[in-house]
Length: 457
Ligand code: SF4
Image (cartoon, rainbow, N blue to C red; front, side, top):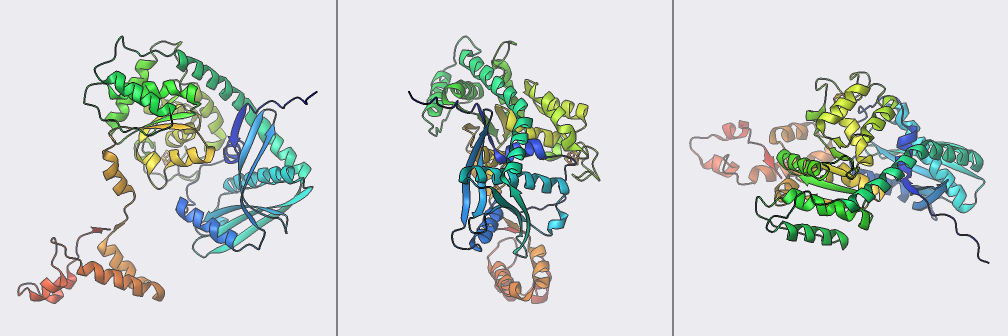
């Protein structure tokens, strides 16, 4: 007789998502910024782990289950000699500036990894450490707690229990969504010329996980011709989300109209559609700062978030007006409510930068949660120019000159070199050093005092 196989997990959640759901409380606080970029974070983790002794294990993949919920993630590092699991946080500045509720979140993550390691390696005790690494001073501050496995297990199970009710709703939503999408019909009696070919190609690209570059003339209904097949592929390809990205607000509006056409009847697929707005457009208090001592919508944000999230998850369409209305009703910031709802939406309509720039939130969340996504890029030719802008640093000549004068010795020489090269760069908009010397009408002194225009490198 063979032993009964355990039931497969019914829902999978990343450690970080679980902790953000269960351990975040109090104010939204962006004072602890600028935080390191993703690149600086990776480099910082590398510095910390390179300082550890032989046998140190970086990036330990771990997972655990509780009552049908699978929790997975990567612990930043484990030192088997010291029996210490480390959660590394790269910061910029002093650790004491990190708000207490952020620190509580970090501890929650560290403790969950602590339990997953105890379970995986049959440990009775473990040291759980939070390592704050300041990328400016390259110094570490380590906070450490000795924890026994039973305490960590209780913490893990309590977190899972608190998340489970929400997870049950998500499981039900996913089932209804996928059943509805399977039955979803094209909203028009016929396809326009070329529209069927486009829709079929998009579906096949999703089915084979390939990239498709499609060129289609204006007027064939590109938005619905791409959104419809991508949605149809969701149940068969077990896609978690579809992202529709456009460089222009008109492109995003057309995509939202297309989804409205697809769901004319109340029985149609219960799809959660979210529109992401730029902060300056979504902000209710542009004259205030994003922390509880300044903005009333940041004060107690995480305490009121569960009710706002619950209301938002029941709305069929979360466009800018719907998000704003729900945010007003629950007195939370609409911009950060929309960001929270990315995790719980099926179709997200946003600007390119949410997926492609250096701090792209959609991309980061996709990688963190290991989502299976389909990305539709509207008018992709715009991506070249937008990509250049996203990945190009801009130096202002006047500001650079000012910083150079006050730079410490070690930086001054290389900065002087850059400055000299910059000035030697032929620029038709301003006289070069050579041309200035030759020009009888422009003296050397006048050339030096003329501030050249900003340049982009
Ligand atoms: S309303 Fe504006 S200032 Fe207040 S938290 Fe939101 S984005 Fe920040």
